[in-house]
Image: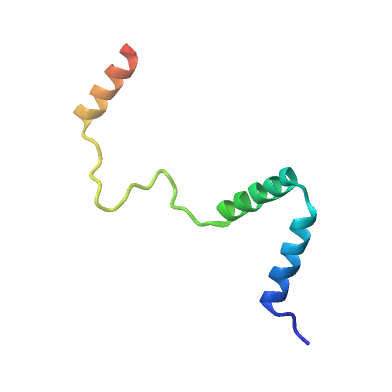
Length: 69
């Protein structure tokens, strides 16, 4: 007989109830981190389709302002 998803969830919940609060929080943080790592994200170097690249004047202005700071 195959295991139903509800059975899996209920067994996970019973196991979690046996842990203390700090262990539950630690496990939750690890699970959230794993989910974020699996999620596909666009590379930072690729701008969105509707954005225009900065002009040379704007880049020069940013460089001068950053050197002043």
